[in-house]
Length: 480
Image 1 (cartoon, one colour):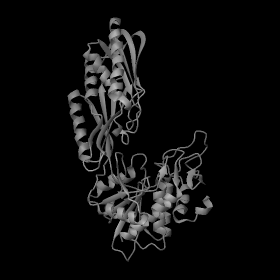
Image 2 (tube, one colour):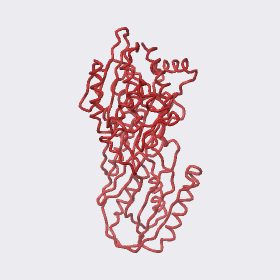
Image 3 (cartoon, helix red, strand yellow):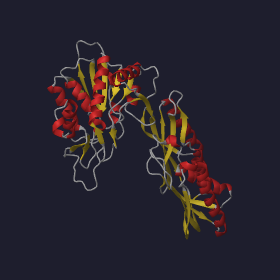
Image 4 (tube, one colour):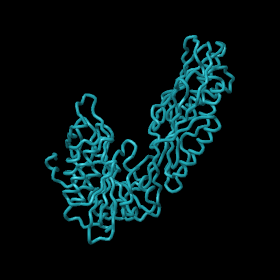
């Protein structure tokens, strides 16, 4: 199988064309222009907005049903370290090996170029006799979902939407989490002190994606650091905090954290050392097989005269860090083992005049997100902090009465004699924005098997793409 063999095949013809056009997130003007020209050439009604989202409609006079299809047109642009590829001008170089489509030294863009190619193939299909189609092409899904966020639903007549941005054939996505980022800023007052300084390191944790792996109940290095500071307080160790840092991204469970402290008296070093050793034992016993490699290390530094946090700042910070919620808050009552609501203290870092704590809140219910933000507001008042929220995206709540879901499952069963597995994920999809904008919209999401997305090893199975397209067409014909 070569590119020559598939270049005229309905789906792959359009995927190859898409792959020739630059479309990194935030740079979708050229792919939007391509879609607008496609609509003009095929004499289809279209709307292009200032965010480069496009709505392209195909009317079937024999049907009184309208179905919306949706995919995003941007891609994550990553290349091999030694590659000279220029995403601004160079096409994605495609190759096929053992029926697997890949790119040379770059991301493939099957996420979500295959979904866009499905819609283009349907808009162009001469023998398509299904329902009226409203094909929504959104931008910047990969870096904030701002296309979906700003898409105007006023021109959408459909009350059923099929999102084509899933990567597991045979699975039907029916719910996703929404979320928001909370930034807490703790003001620091200092005292100039001289004493014995130490570094406490927490590392060896597994970390992971704060949405997809929060259910593993892994250790959070920042929370471990907070507990150690609390142990020092409880044992009356006379210390002052110099700084505290941990985590790398708001959506990653922190694998490491570091605390710098000062002891007034060398005599308390033995007590400090005992608490550090005991902390490691406590964490290993508590987390057992989940975090067998957690390490807590004490490093002695030089005697120094440095600025340390005031006693009041230290007490407030330790209290705040220990009170902040982290991990799974609630599981779903409708879907077994699904995390419904969670928080992740993802980053803490010290600046000259303040400390910033960044927490990611996720839930499939917007009310739960609002409730936790309300809790943060109470902490803001209690500890005299600053609070800023940003990057909010709505959840897509599970609809157990979805007719579209049941129809899709029946069609798939009849077509392939296999059952579609219902999947809900504790991460974000554009479906949340559409569900939030149009309350009566019945939504499902599915797609072909795509592996290693967002890496240079991204690949898609050609036969999986074909099978899902056959299923999509059969589903649309059933919905006519």
